Image 1 (tube, rainbow, N blue to C red):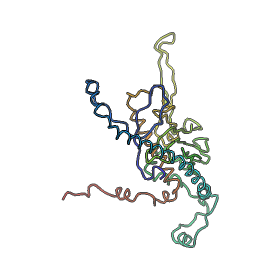
Image 2: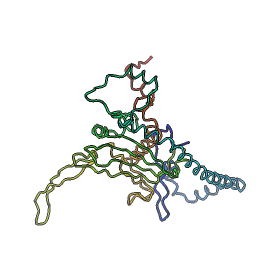
Image 3: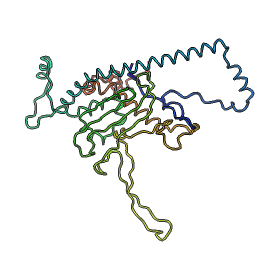
Image 4: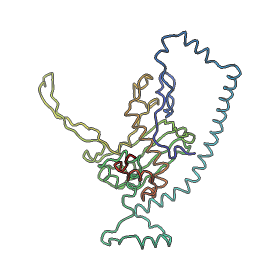
Length: 344
């Protein structure tokens, strides 16, 4: 099955690879348990443990045989991946025209053909059109559809809403070999940035066979072309006064302008350097260094939203727009007042 379907957030993987060997892809598998603090105290006990941990020859042979079977499965999965990619491409050619028609309706370039039942619903429930200011397409369609999903809400800030009103389409494009995918956010002309499309790409070699544990190889975003400093939703200009402490200019002051990051959904389009990969930041190859908690959270939230868009929001955008896709249990929780819960 395509991973991960209704799965929740993701957790981190093993530590980054160090040494001369090529780095292994970053994985969300749990790291092995840390060694006991007393392991270095008694080498003789370690030797005994190694001896005790050896398998009988017959059992060892069976274990090696099982590993060979696993390798056979891997060969079969290679063929499966090729056929799966071909099948995905076949049906993508049928589904994409449907999404293109959806995009035209949302933009106001096409009026849909309604069934008799839908026409009756419009006549009964629709409000009168404003002849002086008729609505074009479906206003705020993607803002509403994305904004109802919990993973998207985590990123959304009040300042983002005005810019996201210009969002006219969201697309997910799988790589031809199904070893990754790209998310494309298309915007109409807006006062914030000049980019027509903001893109986020993911390289996931085990996308088909991830079983809920995508093995990330690369996360690449888009450098947004902000029209001016005041339009930048990710950073703000801060002026600071600096005073020279030495030299012939000692005591003189100057004003410098710096950019400080602010919370915004549009940070989603930042590239992320993954620990344990070739893109890892310099100095991040020490096995003994713990992962930065902020980076952990950033990757977890980023990947959760990426798969939510790929598997849920983009395929069923209209159901998220109407609210039908929202978990009814979540709605029940929102209506629950803890004060109404009385002890027996």
